[in-house]
Image (tube, rainbow, N blue to C red):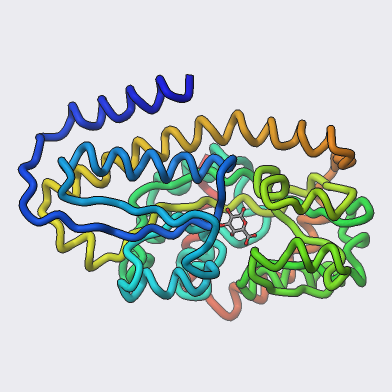
Length: 326
Ligand code: GTR
């Protein structure tokens, strides 16, 4: 089924765009933190294939998997200045460079993944996309990244369970505030270092979605995954704004169509593979703790919101837009 979906997406995208005559082919380097077996890796490969097919080879995308082009904050910087042309980025580490993108890093801002996509498809999404494009990282498609939950050597079922634990977070002050508000010790760290840090006890825990928890082996060095689902953060295919705008309007729409097709594929894969990842880690011995009542976690975030909005009053509009989206 995988191949069939891929083939029909490529055909559909090719059919909706005019065949271009190759004049000056250019190759774009794409950053991807994930390796084989992760939905985003397959989606980025399909994106590259579709760009090639729909632009008739005028734009080529060379995807570098496994984070070999650098850590996420470094790669973002590189894309923003055009040293790397694009990447599949999580919006969390974009917050420190694009204030509007921080909307998605407020804990419990979204009710569900579909709610998050509805917010992205509305005015709030437009404002975020503009802020990102102005900073040089223009989103041309949104990926699903599910919800992030805590994992450690013990269940984390209430905010009190975080007290005194050193928890790895991505690079964003909102996440350090989130852990501190529960009495934990936040430890910002690059994704590539987390497995070793968990193994050696440099950190007591971390937080992520099931596919990432599984794919980079975090489940091998921890015992409990607790479904706090405190963050629902989308990901993007983000392109250096100037490189994208330098393309002809026709090429721009072909690249956009390829990104949309890749996102459609990614979301379908995500649905299946995040369930599979959960099954696999449970089979490997991970105890998954359901959390019936998440309100103590949500209540613990009141001070995070209050302080954040005090320091960034202009973000209130985006928060209100998200909260009023059905
Ligand atoms: C993953 C995400 C990566 C990276 C990672 C992390 O879920 O796909 O882009 O942000 O989490 O925790 O650093």
